Image 1 (cartoon, helix red, strand yellow):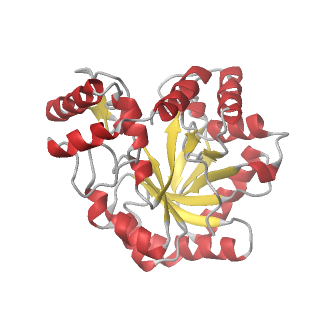
Image 2 (tube, helix red, strand yellow):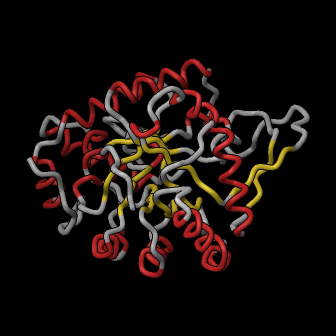
Length: 321
């Protein structure tokens, strides 16, 4: 059963020093601000900062009633201790390389990973567990990892199970052929990409599977009022054609007194299968900005013009007035 999710949730990769370090105090203040603004769904993973995100999130939520929030973490990458020898992590997080990630979708690996996560979080349970980026491990997932998650759900260790990926194709397979409760789709249902309307979203709607939409700013390309030439897309430099398209969308928003980031945040939530938009933040100020973007709203004329200009699919659900 999928727990109730707030429409805007906090993605906690930045609490693991994604791209650059933040202090423990700033991590705490980021979570505190999200809480004060009504966020009650928090997502993390061992991958984020080699466990640092989980430790910081657990500390930030300590003392709050456990029944008052929903927390998800992920399995598929176990952390094994190693001598950092002065090295930093080489997968985008500014932390000492005190652990190495080991892909492991075995039954034992799933249970060991979750047990370690609970230790870092300081909790006796999480609400949702996602298989994390199982792109190259389909057979092992179907034969071992998914049955292991079913066991954990049946035992009441977790309330909901699912998978989180940067692609829609395998998630569609999971939606059709497993009994997952919730899927996290990162970057593939945004103002720039709506292919998920062809398969994944209709299947999820039909089967009652919720979607948490992450990466709605497409790694930064949609995060500014006016996209810049050096903007990122899908964790890399944005192709010039996508920058041009994002600017055309921004022009439409500006003509109607709206902003590109506000539209990017609002758009996915219009689909009935999307339960929450998961947005990362590394500071209280970023949390407040995202909250105000959601509160600002987007005039209906924006959606009408985007469709008439061929910048948004005609069959894409859009927010109502």
